[in-house]
Amino acid sequence: MKIERTALTLLTLLITASSAFADVTIIRSLKLKSQREKGTIQARCATQVHGRTARRETEVITSGDLSEGFQYPVRTITWVSLDKNTVHLLEPTEPDLQKVSLNRWADYLATHHPAPDTGFRISQTWSRVIPEDETKVVRGQTCRKFTFEWRFETENPETYAKRQYGVRTTLWLTDLSPALALRLGEERAFQTDYKKRLGGMALEDLNAVTMQYAAKLVDLDKDTLFAAISQGTAHLQRIAGYPMASQTEWFLVGFKQNKTLFTVASELETLSLKRLEETAFIPAKNYVPSYDEIDVTAQLMVKNR
Image 1 (tube, helix red, strand yellow):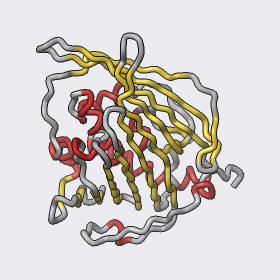
Image 2 (cartoon, helix red, strand yellow):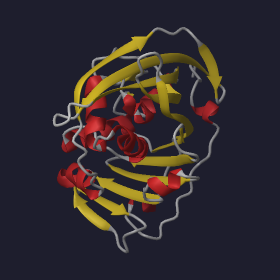
Image 3 (cartoon, helix red, strand yellow):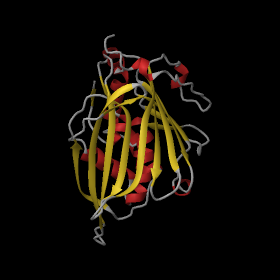
Image 4 (tube, helix red, strand yellow):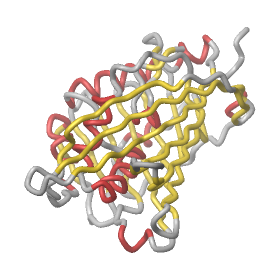
């Protein structure tokens, strides 16, 4: 099993497989802890794919001092139809479903929650892979450790103020059985077409949660930051395996030592191929999902099957 490319977007890495089709439910969670503010940000994203349609639900809960300065919708649901070229969006702040053309979706995301211009720009970046040979068991799966680091410098062209930051991500990767890799081809096929229509990766779900908080601390627009990370780590080597969990540290680079700004821990909760109800992919305000909280071990590592 191969991962498409290494980037901060590893919370939502895509699976390379054949074009065989099967319903897919993938649920991931994250927990963000800040070194500057008390409290946490916890988020959970469930993605369901059926053919050329998909449904994504994201829930976000903040606690402590973080809840005062971090504003994010508590629950958002999107329905995407590649055949109809549409995205339906449901947010708690809106009384009705919103309908957006898929061709305009990336622009809509960038302007829906705009951030003020701080004047800072990214002036240079570099990245590297950190050799690792450690393994550990995550949810019953033996995983290999893979670590990479991305650093960037920001500069205000008017004041000439400069800052240097780093993002170190550790992935815990496991192997998939050939049968599961084959059946997960539907999610891969959908995501490939989805990204192509958007002209690249869009800032959504758990990535959007992390980027919004990071942008506040480094004084950059979240979309600019996300694009820079994606581009800055795109050249890193391809890696084998499926991400079961990850830990990411954002830090301010210091002269003598670095200062941690915040950390993010993410984990795969559910990977299910159970057949989904057709109603799950019909946009509706009153739809109540029921996720199959399966034993991930049963789905993953049966290599001899």
